[in-house]
Image (tube, rainbow, N blue to C red; front, side, top):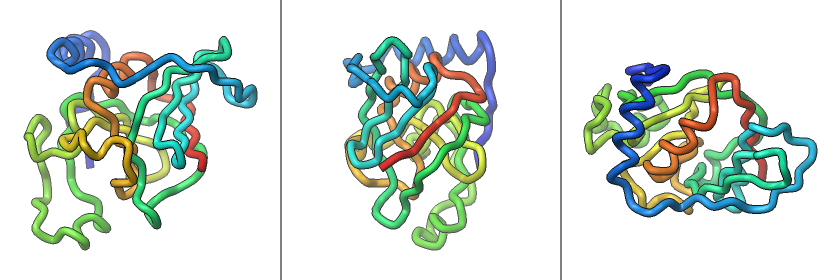
Length: 171
């Protein structure tokens, strides 16, 4: 489903270069007092269409996101199991059923690739937290269960989390 796995300095250089031309940041530091969540965890609140990276000092970095359409949402806990720069994308069967004209693979870096500049896959399914080629969808219910972010925000989050980071999807 994804391609071009990147780690370490090479990914950092690519992502740093991508961040230099991007528009103003949408993220912000906000109070966050859910004590049952460990520092470094990611919390996605579907009803708010916001992703929180928990700092552990009573604050979190809050990012606007697009989440699953009604009927395509999921609730639960998982972990980041892969990090990719300029990921290729292969439409899952459900997406292909609804959009049979989609190609089998859209290469990374293509303006038609819905994954944007980076993606972090989530364990246990076909979902990811990723950038987007449709920034106007951020803040809406738009996906098949993935979490879409502005490209500049996925670049920021990518640099702050690692494989194994706990992710919670909540109402």
